[in-house]
Image 1 (cartoon, rainbow, N blue to C red):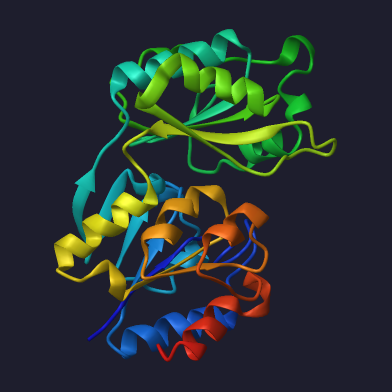
Image 2 (image 1 turned 90 degrees about the horizontal axis):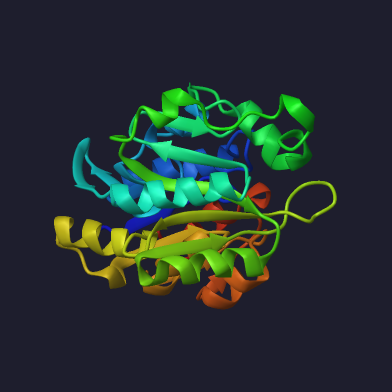
Length: 277
C-alpha cells in the first residue's frame, strides 16, 4: 500500500531563492511511480509556491501552514483566521509599529505599502533588514487599500518581534484563540525574531490528519519532512517525522530522525534508506 509523503518547501525542498536539488526532484518522481502520494506542506500561500518547485509535480498540497488543503486538484479544506481575530491582530501590530505581512486569499499585503503582491521579494528584503522599515519619514504603514479590504480571508500574519517576551505578551492578550510560531532570529544584528500568527486550531499536524481521513489512510503510513517550528506538529503526528540536517535544534529534538541537509540530498537519501524508492 502506498504511503503519504509530506514535504515542507523552505529549508526542506530547497532554501528560499534556491532551486531544488536534482536528487529531490528525482526522488519525488520515483516515489509517485512506486504508488506513494507526495504532498507539499508549506506555510506559503499556494500562489507563492516557486515555479521550480511546482514543476516537480505533486498529488496535492497543504498551504498556509494548514489553513488550506488541496488533494488531487480539489480543495478539501479552507479555514482562514476568524475575521475579528485577524483584524484585531493587524490593528495591534500597527499600533506597536511592527512590520508585518498579511497572507490572504487574494495575495500578500505588506505593511510597507499595503499592496497585494505577486512578487514579495522587496518584503523579504525588509525581513532581512528590518531597519529599512523604520528608516525615517519614508516609512509607510498599511494603506487605505488594505483598510478597505476587511472582507479578505486572512490565513496567516507574519511579523518581526523585538523579543520573545513581546510575542508572549501578544499571545496572552488573545489567549487560546491564537498561536504564534517563532523562528530563528533574522537581520544582520540578529535582534529581530520572525513569527507566524494564525488561528490556534490550524497547523500542519491537523492538516495531515485531514488528508489521511480524506484518503482513508492511517497516519502511521505517513512520513513528513521539515526544518522549522511550524513543522513541529506534523513531525509529531506523522508515522515518521524527519528533521532536515539544517533544521533548528528544537525541531531535531521533536523528530523521529534527522537526515542530511536539504543541499546534501536529505530527502532522497531518507526515502532510499526507508525503502520508499
